[in-house]
Image 1 (cartoon, helix red, strand yellow):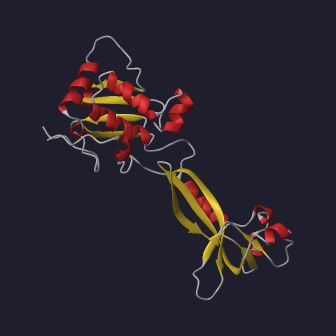
Image 2 (cartoon, one colour; image 1 turned 60 degrees about the vertical axis):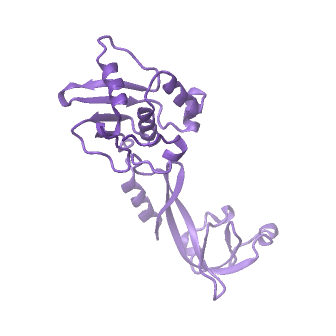
Image 3 (tube, helix red, strand yellow; image 1 turned 60 degrees about the horizontal axis):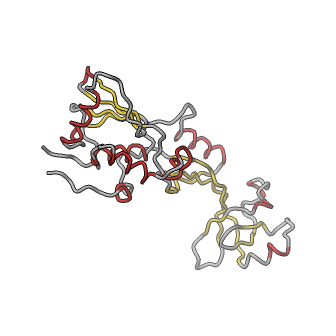
Length: 248
């Protein structure tokens, strides 16, 4: 029984191809306590005091608002900034927050207590030589019969040909698999407009109009959205949890 096709917006909510974080970076925050019955809050130090080392921030009184904090002891504060900060508190700790993005969503990954520790975490979570998890091998059970016929028909053609649809197909005869090279990933509107001058909805419609089965289009979209570059469909490979399965 075939699952009901889902719109791309719904597919984005749960993407089993998503792995790792993009745009890893570090934010220096001040943990501030104030009135006795209020929980601590976190604020970045204002740009005019960003040069101050940690030992000139920690355990110093401060002024703050919803956007930033300023050390009030031993520092000169312009009147216009002073007037913007109605609250007073004490900086208890300098925190280095590690932030990353997945599918354009911001995630707070952890807090460290020194810049060196935070940099070490970012290094462990990233690879300087390039992106990881960009090659996937998944079961052909994730495609209906119609999509398999399409793939087999395309690669069985004796003359080499290109789809021109931002994915190219090739045979893997030793394992009875079919490979797919995804081009121009990630298939986000921002990236596709940058490289092709059009959003994903335009690419999707072009793929469908060219006869690409919708189930295959959906799988390729999820993979490309997660910046996968090489996708292999193999009947002997385990299924991917969270991805639709088509029963015969």
